[in-house]
Image (cartoon, rainbow, N blue to C red; front, side, top):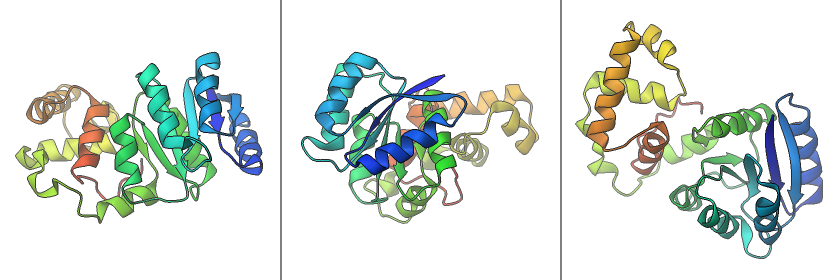
Amino acid sequence: MISVLLVDSHELVRTGIEALLNAAEDIAVVGVAKSGEEAVDAMATLSPDVVLMDVNMPGIGGIEASRKILQDNPEAKIITLSFNNDGPITPQLFKLGVLGFISKNSPVDEMINAIRKVMAGDCYLSADVVNNLATQGLPGYYESPFSKLSRRESEVVNLILQGKSIKEMSELLILSDKTVNTYRYRLYDKLNIKNDVELTRLAFKFGHIDTALIW
C-alpha cells in the first residue's frame, strides 16, 4: 500500500482528491495538510511514501515546503499540483528534486498513475505539461548532450522516457534484452548519468521531450 500525504489549501479539493485516492486499491491517504508549514510537520511525523503537494498555497507555499522537506529528507518523493502547466515554475521544482508535476486539469487516472510511477522511482510530468514544455526554447537546448547519441541510443532514450520496460523495448526495437541494456548503459556513459531518474531530469532540462510522450 502506497501511503500519501495530501497537501492543498482548499478543503473541497482536499476532500475530493482524498476520496478518489482512497478508492484506489493500492493507495491510502494517511494525512492531509492545508499549508506548507503543516506539510513539513506532517512529513516528519507520518513519513509517507509520496507527498502530493499543491504549489500555490498561503504561507511558505508548495515550492518552499518541498525545498524544506527535501533538505531534511533528500529521498522524499514529492509530486506537485498546479493549475499552471508551463513556465519557470516547473524547472524550478525539478531542480529542487521534486519527481512529479501534475496539472489540476489532469484526469484522476493520471494522478493515480503518477503516484505509482514516482513510488517506483520514476519521474512524472502530466501530458499537457510535456506538450507545453516541448515547445519552449529552454536554456541550453542547442547544446544538448543528447546530440552525442546514435540513432539507436536516441530510440532507447525515448522509450525509457515513455516508461517502457526492457522487455517492451526489446519487442519494439526487435533486439534482445541484453542488447537493449547495452545501449542503455552506453547512453548513460555518454550523458554522464547513472539511472533513469537522472535521464528524465536531463531530458527535461534540455528540452529533449517528445510531444507524443505520455508519462
